[in-house]
Image (cartoon, rainbow over all chains, first blue to last red; front, side):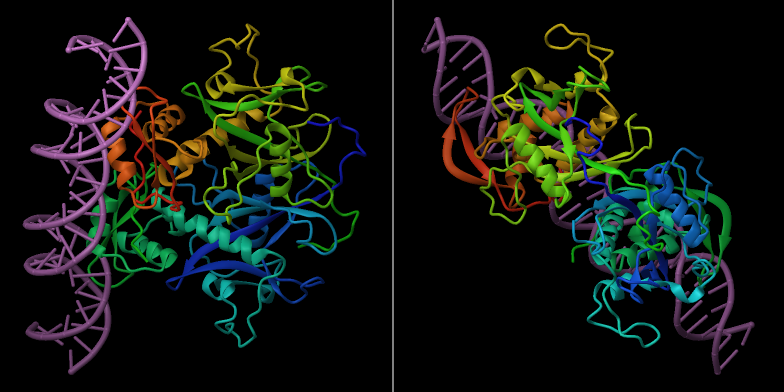
Length: 254
Length: 254
DNA sequence: GCGCTTATCGTCAGGGAGACGACTATGATC
DNA sequence: GATCATAGTCGTCTCCCTGACGATAAGCGC
């Protein structure tokens, strides 16, 4: 490392941005907030904010997550019935021109949450919403929910979101992370619908059932059953302790 | 994002640190440099430096890599016979107390390079070396090459190095990245020794040969043969275009 | 040539995944 | 209450990949 003259390095602003994903109505959705000021005023953006003076990056992300969703981040060391959202660092974005005002380096984090009632952003319900990632990323192809013209996300947030979605898609292959999209108790079919929504494919219910119930440590039966999806009552499970799936869940070909 | 008062956010220093890995004499090695000043004066550390005023993070990492090793980073968009090192972002480390002097956020990058002649660090050959990661991470178990007491790396660099090694170990499972450790032309046996060194296991030469030659796009024969490893002449290959191995190379159980 | 080394090809058994048939247990509808 | 639609669950069969390992090939040093 070079000599450490306090005037020898340029000062940066450091922020955390959040890619918060959930599955709603069979679609993978991300949390976006409406920008109230320039630049990109009125555009949708990922939630985020400055890292504080004495705050670690993960803590800053967890704080922002709590402020935006009310969720607390899952502590990886905590026991299984934590119900906190999964939170992990995604990547850091520092293009010198990504913010026109000054040099901002953003440490993006990825959070996976079960389906939540409704976003709350400082009480202003109109400034935060869940939007299908499909719509957010292919803004030219569709129109927003309330008829507004869909426009690209602010800053480089489309890129960050795309990276987060790709991370989630690949990570549920070889880890038990898909359970982070489910409530504490869930059925095999609900878990399968998570995979189908995240990957955008249809999976064979019988082979899926064999796979997930046959992988040791992935699911543990909770004893109860439910018919909330209709049809024959389904056994309820919780996430088991296993973090990695070996062999992995295979994503079908395109 | 919060209102943008220039005095509303704390200033950070942003650096890039490099985990440069190579395979030397059947061992996975990392590039370390000796610190010339406090703190951690005299201790080994990962190479790195400040991100410049108008420099993207990846560019800063590529610049540092060139300064330390003479390697240029591989451009993912460039054609295959690039011979540049693989370079990717690894993660960002921003604990408020990771540098005792001030708030420094370090964006760590991972570089994979073929076996190089010798490190050059600004001409000072004594201040940079390749060291087996085994030695660097388990400093209590062994003694450095020239008899010196092995001490932990400076700052949180042991953690960063461990993360980089873990990334490399898992990434060669499902990608063709192992070829980044090989010269432009290499044999199946040389590629196998890369896997063995990175994973620290022994692989069956016959099954390995079947696997890598049977995976479409992984290896393309270059036409020549070599006996530089002794024994029967071996066919020479170059890396094929395929980036992902499907199905992956399976890492044997512990 | 002999032994040593490494490369390469073949064979066989076992496990996992895809394809898909069959059966079960609910709620909804007539 | 019979029927139907909907999910869930269990089985079977085949194919492909992998691990284990025998056998052969083609250099090198002596």
